[in-house]
Length: 198
Ligand code: HEM
Image (cartoon, rainbow, N blue to C red; front, top):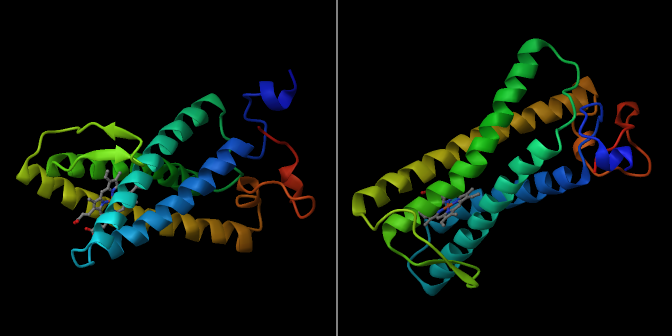
């Protein structure tokens, strides 16, 4: 078996194509969901509002499935070892990444719990029914609504930190933190980028 397929070693210095695709698809979906989520709650009651809420739920459930798959993939195909940096930065990066995994799952789960407590039926793109996680209950609905909103603000703060760190690594430290999470281009890869994962 070629090393690229057999290798689970952390000697590889780039993320694999699957990890890269999952990272950018989930990142785009979450950014869109945060924006649409904040916008849609201010809409007046109308068929458009119902449509937007429905799509928000469908895409949110998709993010939950993708995030769960991403976590499993990460266990199966270990990420490359961190690039050399001061200990506190390595610790901060590990905490930020851990928090993002937690929030990627908690954010859609809290939406699902909120929807369950509201008693509204839920489906996935109208293809199949999604079961309620808890019984219909007014107090539980208000609780999960608050949790969903606060998780959104927390997620925005953690994303801002993640973005700031990426910009610093790319433009100040000039290391391959960003480029190793990008698909390899014919030219322009940095010297540290020479080993691939699938
Ligand atoms: C990546 C996943 C998700 C993100 C980033 C996200 C983000 C947001 C945001 C920012 C809001 C506005 C909060 C506020 O200002 O009150 C919101 C509202 C809402 N979300 Fe999500 N959401 C996600 C997944 C889901 C899922 C899976 C469901 C349901 C199955 C859901 C159901 C709702 C509902 C019903 C509201 C409106 C709450 C209200 O009317 O006050 N969300 N979401």
